[in-house]
Image (cartoon, rainbow, N blue to C red; front, side):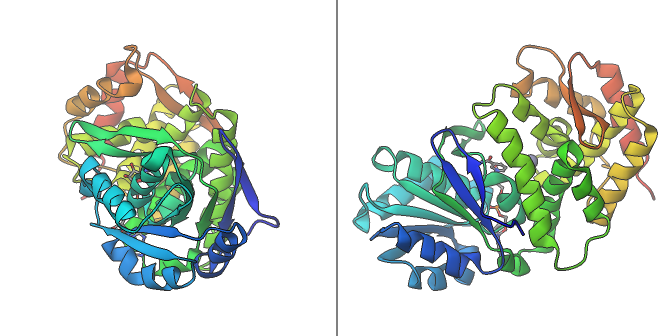
Amino acid sequence: MAPEPLTIQGAEHAYPVVIRDGALMDALPAFVEARGFARVAVITNTTVGALYGASLVERLPGAFLIVVDDGEQYKTLDTLRTIYTALLAHGADRSTLVVTLGGGVVGDMGGFAAASFMRGVTLVQAPTSLLAMVDASLGGKVGVDLPQGKNLVGAFKDPLGVFADTSVLTTLPPNEFRCGMAEIIKAGLIADPALLERLQTRDADGIGEIITRAVLVKKRVVEADRLERGLRAVLNLGHTFGHAIEQVSGYAWKHGEAVAVGMVAAGRLSAARGLCAPELVDTVERVLRAAGLPLYYTHLDPAALWEAMAHDKKWQDGTARFVLLKDVGQPVIVDGVTRDEVIAVLSELREEQPA
Ligand SMILES: NC(=O)c1ccc[n+]([C@@H]2O[C@H](COP(=O)([O-])OP(=O)(O)OC[C@H]3O[C@@H](n4cnc5c(N)ncnc54)[C@H](O)[C@@H]3O)[C@@H](O)[C@H]2O)c1
Ligand SMILES: [Zn+2]
């Protein structure tokens, strides 16, 4: 746990990130009350709302729940419209506070509702999935998907505060927990050797500290590059490969699991190019395996994966760009990787799938 409240400097203001057991039911209501809000819209989904919605609303002044369907397929303009309608039906105005209670889907969509409703109302994020705690709730990016692709409509919106209650992770399904672990491992690999070490020796109650360390990594990166001019790209470690796996599999692969395989691929590509020692690949694989994450894939065609990457919006200028590793904590952005190099690594990963 951080000795003093951790804060993130956003584009407009700095905001606290409170990470601890109980943050949802005590720290968040105290924070809201101290700021004098009289009306609070808690946006959540059917799953998380059923677990925590009523208790949270009870603790907030003039609060009401807006419950949306659960799932990425509902992160749409249609659902957004139902949110605006519910806000108006409850008499929300410019002074209303929006609290998002849920995983990254609720955080992104509810955050975008807050960024756009009446040209913007105040937002507090209460991430309840591990991935939302270490990634989606931080950095100010909010938005929804279009049929043409993910996150195609959105905004930058700094929250007033982020409250990550580690006790809610007890109800998070194990596969969702693993997906959050993939992002935590990514944070360790790009910027925090001690975190990576910690992951290999973790005791059951160390999750608060692990989340805090991963949040500190994202904090450092987004503060250094608030408008995404370049440095933020290191957060994409494993993601170029990962997005291709998600896409080519028709989203049968979950994001965190695809990124796990993507990090193995990035490690192997780094070693193949002589950027890092081969032992680094072992470390990457060991940490991922310990978290129950996949290291290989089957059934997907390496050439199709390459094609998907070539159409990645981050490669618009036509150069094949990857985040690779010189060592733990030493990411490098490498341009001009060839198709042959990538296909070689991808073929290796497919073929090494143990029987
Ligand atoms: N804005 C950003 O910078 C950013 C970064 C990364 C990801 N994202 C977005 O985040 C989304 C993925 O987020 P996610 O992985 O949290 O998915 P999610 O929001 O779909 O949550 C995963 C599942 O866990 C359930 N859940 C969440 N917390 C729970 C809890 N405490 N107990 C029981 N069930 C719980 C949810 O209802 C859902 O079924 C994607 O839409 C992605 O685009 C945004
Ligand atoms: Zn990710």
